[in-house]
Image 1 (cartoon, helix red, strand yellow):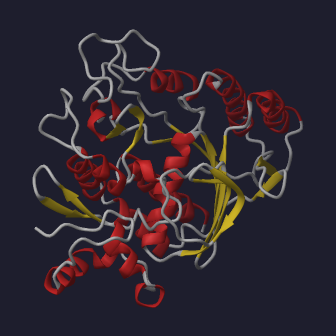
Image 2 (tube, helix red, strand yellow):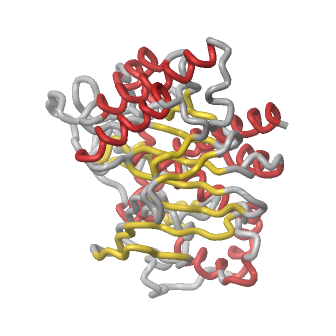
Amino acid sequence: MRRLSDGTGNWTVCLSFAFTAISFLTIGRYLPVDITSDGFAVRRSKYENVVNKKHDHMMLSSYTYSNCPFTMAKFSQYQLAKEGPFTSETDKMINSAMRAEMALDLSNNAKAYERVTNALQNHAFNRTILLDGDSLTRQLFISLGCLLWSAGYVEDYVLHHFVYNGGTISILKNANYTASSKNFGAAHVKVKGGGEIYYISNPSKEKIDGLSKRMVHDACDAKKEHYEARYSFGQDLLPMKKKDVVVLAAGHHKDRSSYISAYKHFFQCINDEKSNGTKAFAKWPHFFYQSSSVASFWTEDGRYGSPWILGKDMMSCQPTVPSAVHRQKEREEFGGLVPFIGDDVDVKKLGEYHVEHGDCLHWIQPGVPDLYAAQLSDFLITITERTL
């Protein structure tokens, strides 16, 4: 097997023409629509082919995460393959590249790409969608954005608070890049044919109380005719229409209890008005709640900060954890008040799909977040049909 580039541009040996042709046939349906005009084929050959050194096995990404402009390198197959095999109880037979392939199979078996493209073909993305949450909601945005990108439906985008190799650029627009570390606190995607997707990270601790009170006031006291979502991206508030969608998440940080309290009050007021037969919120958008992920650290309950289980490799993750405490809390507080996204994904048994290497909270991508993106796309079709 000939060795591939390490991503620096220094090729050791070129792949044969025949293998290249087969590779492109294998992944063709996931390539950007304008591949022949923008050079993506060249970049893919450098960054999407992954060599599993332990098994001398090559795998190909089913869609282009290394070239997708929204991805974070540490979640990608390419980055994981660079890490290579490492010694741990759960990884003696399975190295990083193989786990990435497992995660990719999970996404493909759930038909995530097909479900997103089905929603696109049914014009279900012809609306404004706001994803409001922490880094796990950002992974949902990455999945959704990259699936749209792979289908050739991203018209334009802007990332805010972009970090490139330790430096910060306030706004980065329409740049294809690879980097060892990427981070953004807000993003905006324009979808071809109409529609927009926004991501906004949870606010700083100092702003949580004020923003929460405004949400509750608008729903419970003022009963405003139109809903305006918080979004600090060139404007303080984002006007939302009846057909639009807001996805909220309390996240996994210590301030999550503040969000849960505010969201429960907010959802309860909306549901009370609807139960009373009033039309107070007839022009408000659709709300969904993103179910929490589950941590799979080698602790008694899987959560970081709990007592560690002695003798375990802390760089790996538990394959299965006994409970999902955050999810159970969310079911108790929000059950019957708002539809959940991802609640039917049994994340307790998906420990091997975490990034590992010390991160047992975030997921390999492609992988588990694609299932969330697929389910959101299914919901979009449902509400589109209901509002026609």
